[in-house]
Amino acid sequence: MDLVVYVDHSDIHEGSLHELTEGIRRLVDVIDAREPQLIAYGFHLDEQASRMTVTAVHPDSASLELHLEIGKEEFRKLGSMITLRQIEVYGTISERAREMLEQKAAMLGGAGLSVTERFAGFARPTQTRDPIGLPPLTR
Image 1 (cartoon, rainbow, N blue to C red):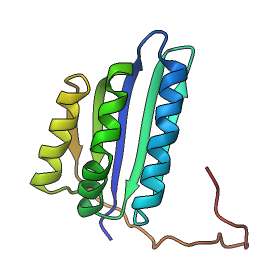
Image 2: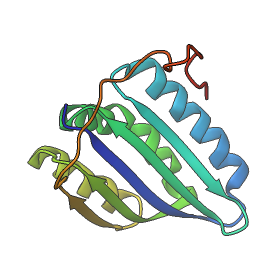
Image 3: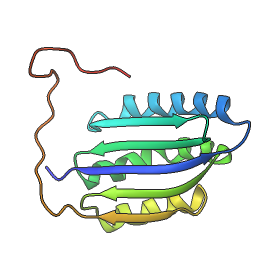
Image 4: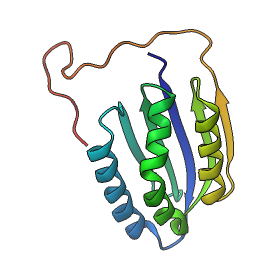
């Protein structure tokens, strides 16, 4: 398993927060229904600073490519409400995934892209229940 961790940072345009949160919920519903391979996906809003951070954990580069393809139109709908500042990717990705990320960055504000491959570490298979038997977290 060669996990890919995706993080992006955006500025939220003034007066867009309510519409943005509705768009985020629609996007999350689409991704949840169509991407069962995605390990984790989260939107983190700092309303006082008008900033948004998105996190995703993919099992591999192919999952990231699928995510970018499935989410493309929904990402575009959010474009008028945010300015994407930075995309950070940790893990090994394909050239196609890199090109798709560059296209996303250009579409949402011309953000920079950094990709850092893992030097050392490991990944464990995901579990549907934690070791003490609690159900998984819900959104």
